[in-house]
Amino acid sequence: MTIGEALRHLRQLYWCRNQDLILALNTNGASYQRIEKGQKELSLILAVRLCRFYDISLDNLIDLIDPAELERKELSAIKIAEKRKARR
Image: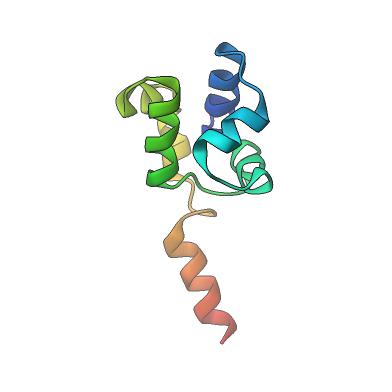
């Protein structure tokens, strides 16, 4: 399961509305939607907030995610930095 699918799964499992989740996470709705759609990486801070919100451990969140998903290079912070540097 991708990170976005895992987050969507948790939201549906806990019957959580997007608005409630966004308020609890203190984040932008569009930004969170991009994470669920796989267009943006999940930050550690947001992952910790999610775990606290759902009252699960970070290990439990990680266990939901396919290991191959963690190797995606196209969204990595290093790859983004390389693209920015190349544009200069």
